Length: 306
Ligand code: 13P
Ligand code: SF4
Image (cartoon, rainbow, N blue to C red; front, side):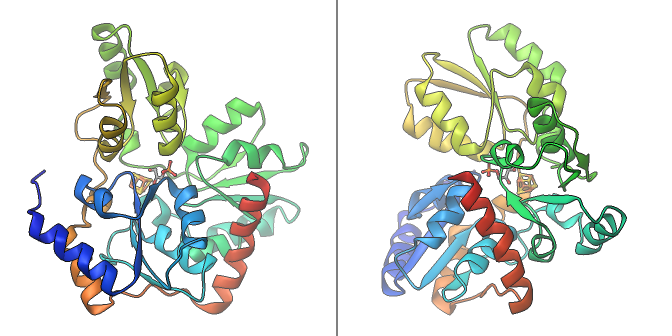
């Protein structure tokens, strides 16, 4: 990945000031995008950062469900995306109809939706979750309740195993994390026997089974910092290497598989962020009736996670 020239960075920072914009980025963003952000985090902390943003304009450097979450939680703020086509293929796999059909079949069930969903799906779900709080939220569900977890079948399966509880699962998964393969991980572990294996819970269950730790992007970074180990095999998108290397320069981080790239996350560039702030485009909106219902599921997530 090329290094952006300093002029672009200076131009962006000047515009950010002129527009009084608050920039929230995900750890999978390009290094230069993370470096100019006011806040960098996992999906959950990005949502909280949006709620607490000290400015009226928020620029979200992440995929569309992250910007939509900011709109839903802060309806009075202007939320901008530098790339409206940056989306999450897993989130796009599910529709509100899929959830409503399930609800028709099992009217007493509870629908827990991963934050990686369109606003329309959140609007028909009971509670939302992210990878950082999914287990905590599911633990709050009545033990005998029938629960539909959407849309990530790997995340759902990993949590169901951890909590020893049955969940009905939608069939989707993340095409990037699906690329982490058990045999490659085991080969790497042979080459680096002292390395700890840290993976995202969107990985296949057999991958999570052999990991020393599975958690959200932020939790992976925190684990690496707190651990006495000096080398780590990382099973999540390559963007996380930047904050890891920046925070712990003395430690070694080895990516579990080559090409662990989310192309949608990487479609955001400094040039697009400059255009976005110059023209105040593209404004992200969510239709009011959907927004109000989706907000209930998101606020419930925050209430149950604290
Ligand atoms: P985190 O919430 O762990 O940052 O994950 C977001 C995501 O899209 C993972 O693929
Ligand atoms: Fe979606 Fe996977 Fe990209 Fe995360 S890494 S945004 S789950 S496609």
